Length: 266
Image (cartoon, rainbow, N blue to C red; front, side, top):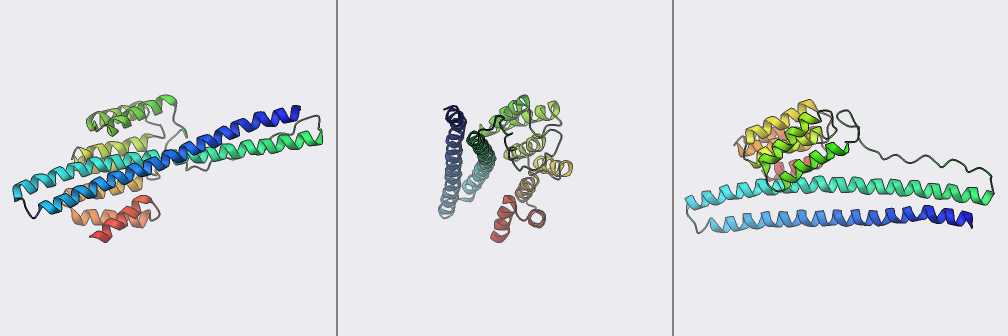
């Protein structure tokens, strides 16, 4: 009876982890749906603009193009946010699998001890560590305060308050210069500058990220952002070179896949 009660007590958290895993999977699916909706909106705007080419004057067409550029910048920002959230959800899902595996191992160890009737319980097997890349700066896990300030700035970006987002991330960089979230904060500043059509400022910010944190996972995305800003500035040759460098240095990254598509479309 004691062994059965012990196994039941250990099994309950494992079942809870399975429910959390299902929830994480649902969130990832919801994020993918939102990404598809944004892409459809963008495709629809482009199609409508092409139809207007045949019936409207150049002045109105110019205004439509400028409005489309603004919408594209906003949608790209939303896609970046959704991609980031999806990455975080996938990481949490992996952590759930690790936690579940650890609990199951403990259950197996506890059952073995009960069957043998040993007077002392054998130590549980060591937990399986989650595989994660080393942090770009000191501190593998951000503190609660760091995460709170970072999330507050990111919420400003999501809401389209790009000036407030930049100020929030700059405050974060000054307050927590050694946080593992520093490269990401730098990246979002560059994205917010791009959304404000400060293309030169965005390029400078992303280049600073690349030079300061060359091992950060945000470097490929920063290079893609630079190429986009260069194209908006009319520097097609510079944009192409940045995309080619991205493909050469980070061929397996998601940003490289996007760069390949852009190069193929030109």
